[in-house]
Image (tube, rainbow, N blue to C red; front, top):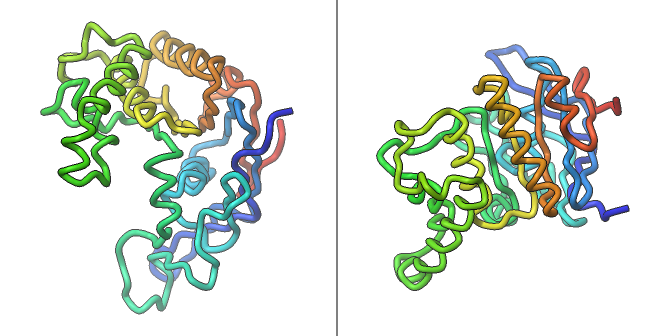
Length: 251
């Protein structure tokens, strides 16, 4: 059996609406193994996206921890700043995830979302290359630009869009846009690909094509964690769990 690569332990996450507190995750735990294609299924509002965002260090739990290769991603609970808590002194902004999780977001995790988040003024290659620019100084970018462009072209070819590399998003179909989003997520060669309802904005046929592309990536060794509300989509993964009342249960 492959080694555990990502592990969530006893995650608690609440959102605050005025004086009301909405509990989303209630002691949620999950294990992801290297090379696994794991689907997290759940109804709308069950907290699937919240869980995925915490796994990828895009959001911070009030309690609990996520471990990547045995090392904690988040700061200790007493040191975390989670905006929105009552009486937090009016602090605002993004959650404090720490330097380690910042690095993991850029180097370890690749993100694919339901809505493609492509920049309309950029062509396919330019959209895919963007993650390679994050955190690079001008000097570093100039020195490494050729290598970054090569990696972006390879990612575009991998998702079958080599002939569309100079097209802009408005010249692409929905399925092609999602393939660009997948290529962008792959350009930094992520250890784990996190996909949030990747077929939710597509018709059935195009959705099957995107799932087939994800399956092919997984067969080639890519670890994938995907959330979906659709049982038929979840069946495409090799392992599926369900998020119910803030906790993960095996199906």
